[in-house]
Length: 110
Image (tube, rainbow, N blue to C red; front, top):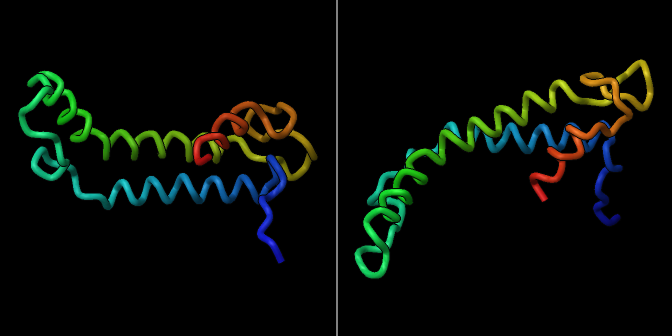
């Protein structure tokens, strides 16, 4: 039987997306912070020292930034999910399901 993607906006798709975001969050929390000598920044050459400093700052903060972003996505998914009582509405905002918030977040893993 071929694998099929859950129906767009279904409770199954919501659960899979939440699991994906939580997985990113957990992997980010366990990741070792990157250091300048572990990132693979090119040595010397055509890049200016300022761009190298910016790269180091980006890599140094990436672990925390990804974890924070995944945390926000997870909280939004917990708020915005299909309602049990009223078929077809979001429990977080009351808009027709799938709501715009879920639609935007569901584009992330693609």
